Image (cartoon, rainbow, N blue to C red):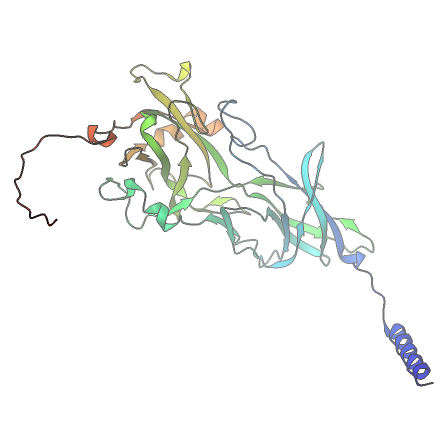
Length: 366
């Protein structure tokens, strides 16, 4: 009897709870809006526009997540945001879509990919302040830069900021997006009536240099000064008051070609070029260069030789940035030949020699 009473009380409690519950939809359709962002992945020297189709290409991965933000047009402050993970492709290209919840009103809208490795974001919750930048390189990398040591003869000072090169950040920024009241699910469009489109705020430059004596190189890096360290992404304004030097790796190779190293092509040989040359190349990302009158465009190569001695060479490359190849194709083709010194004779092993004998008398205990 007691069990029957307990079960009856439990049934009454469940019924009361059910009657007091209010069923609500997962989304309030009057405030939910479909949104689509197309990403332009036509990136010079990364996915298209290669200097040499047979060169090894830089690694590239499409964005995994796009963040879209709706901001107050007066203050720039974020009012709503969502992360778009659904990736599709149609005749127009690659796009990401999803749903964002926002009240009727007028918004400034921006979107960017959320999964960059080297490129970082600050002030992400404000349309007018959001900025992209990269961190300074690790101290152990900087300590190995012979060109930045006193013995290396660098012109750079101790306050020089050396940062990693940027990976691609795709950005869409549209002002004056209107959301009207609707009692059903609608679509968020730009003021022109289209979907949102994102382009990268980073430029990828292909750079190559001729090197004689590559067989003596065990590692190689480069540091390019006179570059901008940040960019305000919604306006795409490069911060010229934030000078940095960009660090990137070059891939050395020996007699045979390897990733980042190849043989010299016939049309790349100039009069006076020495024999035994190879081309060393790579691709790096930057927000842009600072006008030359503010900062010199100096490129320093730091080599470590197989015989244990560092070697560096600095080249003024402002004229290279003014070439048609650099302006239209983002190719930095350096004609100067870097010559790695041959190892000293004693570096390949012992260098025996006969010196004067010293006579010593020692007691040997047996």
